[in-house]
Length: 435
Image (cartoon, rainbow, N blue to C red):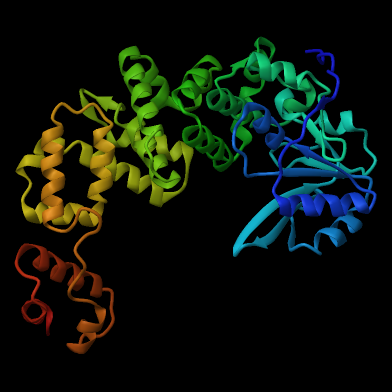
């Protein structure tokens, strides 16, 4: 793909936090040239609120940049010899961070995401510095001093046309993760991937196998949490033949009705007013609900899918728990008080109900009744606090051992099924476990 003809500088003033402006003005006083780069420029032009700022600093050395930035806060070098610094400053009892970097070139010298040789050049030409970016919309630069947006590769036109196109084919192919980054941008901004970029992505997709799944999952999380319709990303994965890497998704895609229902579900869940942690496991669970075998949700397929994404056992267990209890929906009306208390120990009931509200339920009244019962029992947000604890066992003369958990579980089971009177519970414990 040939570079598009660069446009004339666009005169505009990007509003910046006052503390950041103070730093940039100081750097200019030291003969540095400063440019906002990447997502902060793109997001401003798209009218998207931005809290992350990346600044590229020209015309000064690495030693000078370190010296100047340390005047404003705590400085940390990201990666060895990458010339990227994270500056943390305290503003109104809050810590804010900004990324500063030196202009650099990157050359692929080995396989994997760390196989790059990076060389910083304080006097690197602006166009050359910009050329290492992945997509034209991310290659835009903002000259803070002149208040101009610089566009060397047609990024402004691509923003206008909602087109996502690579900057440089050679450098794009050096990092296959850019495929998922592109998918994420398309889903987040409702862009379309250019024909040339699609072809390029397909040609290097096998290189994704060399990447740690943690890096791929980071890109997954971005489009699942930031895209208003994350299902667009799954469709683009299908188009780029990436479902081959996720057999459960590929099998689901072959059932077009289930595939469409899954997309509607995760789009609904993506727009819940929840924090990112809850929203993520809601969306993953919503996806797993459709991995069915003979009309039953297949826990093994769900687990296999999640393991392909992440080694985070806590997240995996939370998602599988949500899927498991979805299967019990038909039994909500038959659950005893004890069952509900046990359920509360395993999963947040209020969040479970919030999740189920956004899945295809036929009987919302049953769900509301179930939630009201949990509220009456006082376990809608948290399980009942254990009356008997480790200190109580020590006071009874028990010595710390691996049996403590077994004894405490016994006491808790009695608590939620019989009584919350501590003395009575301790009598049961002594009778059952005292030697």
